[in-house]
Structure formats: C-alpha cells, structure tokens
Length: 383
Image (cartoon, rainbow, N blue to C red):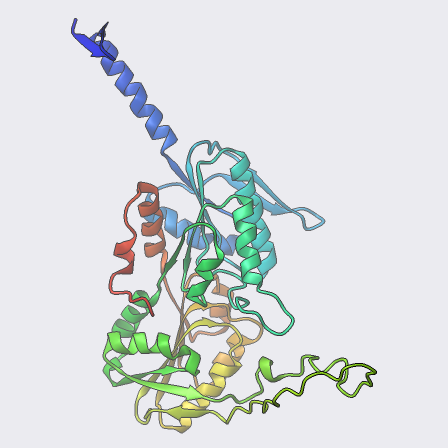
C-alpha cells in the first residue's frame, strides 16, 4: 500500500480507494458542469429555431411547459432538474411581443429559484430595440426591458444585430451581439446571378454605415437615398405647443429664445448611379414596408432592373406580404431570427436564411468558456 503525505502527515490510501475518489469527483464535475437548452415559447412556430439549434448542438430540448391561463396569465413549469447547470433560454419573438417577454421573464425567474448556475438568454431579435432613445415625452423602453431581464435572473444574453450597438450599455451583464452579415453576404454571392453588377443601397443616411460595410466586403458601389415620401413621426404634432403660448401671464414673461426653423425633408433622391444595375437595399429590420416599397419605385425609375431587400429581422407586420407582392421588389431576404412562415405562404418573394449555426456555436463556446472572437472575425468596431 503506498504511503502519501497530506499537509505534512502520513496517510495510507490504496490505489483502489484513489480510483474511487477520482471517479466520484469526475462524476460530480460532470453533473455540476452540464447545460440545458430550453424554449420559452408557448407557440409551436416559435420553437422551430430552438429545435434547429439543439440539433446542431446534439442535445435534447429541455422539458418545460409554457402556456397561458384562461385570464391570459403566463405559467411556466420546468419538468427537470437544473440545479448547478448553465441554462440557455431560446426566445424568438412572435407578433405578440409582450406575451413573449413575459414568458421569458417568468421562465428566467423559475430557473433562478430552481438554483440554476447561470441563465443565458438567447434572444436573436431583441424587442423594443427601436425604443432606445428619448423621444418627445416618451421613455427609453429598451433600458427598462434590460433592467427587467437582470432582475428576473438572466446573467448573460446572446442577440443578433441590435438596432443600435449602444443598447449593450443598458445591461449590467455581458451581451454578445452577433452579426448576420456573413450569412446574408453568402446569400448574395451564391443566389443572386451577376451580383458583380449590383450596387448596395442605403434606404436612408442613417443606414449608410451598415450598407457601406456590405459594399466594402462585396467590392461593390454604394448609393444612398435621402428624403421621405411621407412625413415622419418626428415631424408630426406632439403637443409641445400646449398649453398655448398665447396665454396671459402676470409675472415674468420668460426669455426670448432663438426661433428654430422647422425641418422639411425633401422628396426622395438617390445619391449614386443605379441605372442598369441590381439594387440591393440593406437594413437591419423590415417591419412596415411602405418605405421600402416607395424606395423600390424610385430605384426602378432611376433604371435599376432588379431590386433586393436584405435584412436581419423580418417582422413583416400588418399587410407587409401583400404590399411586397404587389410592389416592384423582386425579393426580400431575411433570417430566421423571427418566425415568418405565414408571411412566406402569403408572399413567395420572401426568402429565409438560417442563422442557427452561429447561435449554436455561441452557446457551445460560452458553456465551455472559450473565446467568442472567432465569431467576430473581420468585424470592425463600426460594423
């Protein structure tokens, strides 16, 4: 029997005892270091992305039940132990955004109270991301949602193409903002014939930086559209003149501030030559499509013979499928961050690019403690 020393004292431990101890220690580490992937959706259409991710990871989707009570309260029942494990909650956002948010919050809190080690939200399309700036007398709802997720128990989130990268600063825990551009660029190269004769188009000056990134990677030209067909929300009356300025005052009349001239946006104009070219409009979200339809008509008038729209998140709300089908747009390409199978049935012009590969790899790397730099190869700070 070998003699071993622990803390300066002799101890007798047999080889058989050593192997038993090491075997038990290994098993304990495996059980404590495992991970589970759950879907927080109550609708079948929204679980498709979760199934694709788990298939790529080679794991089963966690057993849970998410449903709505008769009074529309959200209830979540987790059907297996999650103690000491890394839990990934995949939440794709359907049209009923607020229900999806409550499902995510309730599931995260249920896992937190079940002693999960880490709770990572996989939210490819982050809801309320457009409400990330102060407008008029509103509020920054995106910041509120970030605080709610932290309070519910999330310790990390994986998302894709945030509307503004600065949204990451709203969170008190790590955020991995993945990019869909490699998949969309691959689609352009493989599925658009004669893409070398294309030109990348920014629908507005604010989208020019994103479009410039695509143009530089594809070695194509860039065109920018300026102006709007209709008045934007920021130009509409918002009640800033109430109470009326003509009210009578008995005290101090106030300071005479310089009068700012009201903004007046010109009709849509195109900076760049699109004649005889394939126009590819780049954006991050396509929801209400009226602006895209108007932009497509202008590009057709300027001589573009084919028009594609590439976007990460295809919300396609309201009558979007019908408007796209009746418009000059030839094809709308979006990823599967948001379920849109119904819209595809209504409009054959809508095509889907699968991004489950990069989401699955992000989950694997986070669980194994590996660097995420590989997923951001050649991604510049401004991209």
